[in-house]
Image (tube, rainbow, N blue to C red; front, side, top):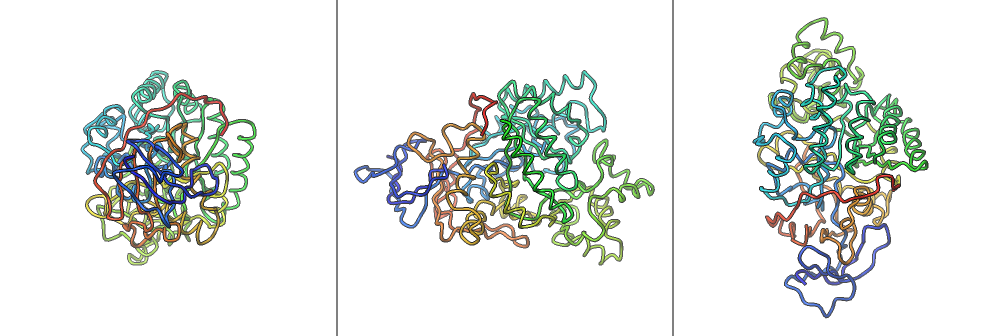
Length: 526
């Protein structure tokens, strides 16, 4: 063996209880599990007090915008993450049109942007090397922006054909599916029919539909129903991103949303979801504006904010109530860093202005380059969603670093703490999930969702993606005021058989791969 772990509790990712065994690895595979006392290895580890599990699969990641800067994937791999599903919420680094992609490029000024096509981007990652495996999605926002710009209208026939060609090309170059962000421009302008037509292109190539649905507040139920309709009409699997109900007046809608998912699954449709273990979300401040205000891109938005009558209409269409601005925290504002860590209500009080007017002023002053953390969900719904059998764990975060450009601002703690938080808070402390159930939601379930036949389970012959952790000490340390803190209790992480994390820290190894889709029956039911 290359690596031999003695006397360790094994959770195989299936949801079954733990059992005591030895675990051996040879090259990039698990070579054996059981009594391996007669085996020899170059690296021997004493697993006493530790638990071995399949490497965690982050089914909802945005690391595609940070891996070119941080290929070691520090904040993710130190959580035990060995595979990331990137390109979520309709946003991916490619295909890239320099005009329509201007706002995306401005959001990530530290990227080199040395690619145009989806395949070029994946080649860039391959040549650079990675510490985690990547399952890439192509974002509908980039497809629509490249195919027809950032305008609020239906595509012409020629534009639709151009978008379908872009989707087909991305799928052929390595995308696993199409993601949508239906509260963000330009995705917000797409009709259900448009999304069905593009999803049919994906379905023919064995792909998936991952969606940040059209609304997670008052329109939650209708938005979940739309996602299910798209999957049913296009005949492809649906993954609903970060399933949540925002704002107190909408919390009761979660029961209806879950019932819709249960009904769809009972009818044989492949519909699943993911969730992060926090009651605060993170997005851009501009996402709280009405959709029409974004028509034409960020420059058009800034022009509208300078027109008094148009600005008044934008203010009337804000999705934050007047009494809720104390729940909206400025997380990152590169053009006005002095605002970071303050709520919009606090800034408004300092300025002696109305909070809604202050929010619009901040957008104009910072050229709309502002991200927020919005505390708008409740714990009861979070627990219900985490326990649902069709829900897996996804961070909705990125692979960050405590220093450099990826350590600026007040990032959401989910970037550093999602998986350890589930294991520490919701398993050990609150017993919302059993340890075996939680590990299943982090490994076996997402692997099944993706059709990964050789990952997500800890068994002989499977790929050697492993995490060794202490179930008595594992916990998140990242907070909303001090987010750049690695968790404790994650002792070793192996990716494709190589140690990437040890008790001494990151080893510098980059054995990660861009994973390729496996042939599968899209009509199967999970």
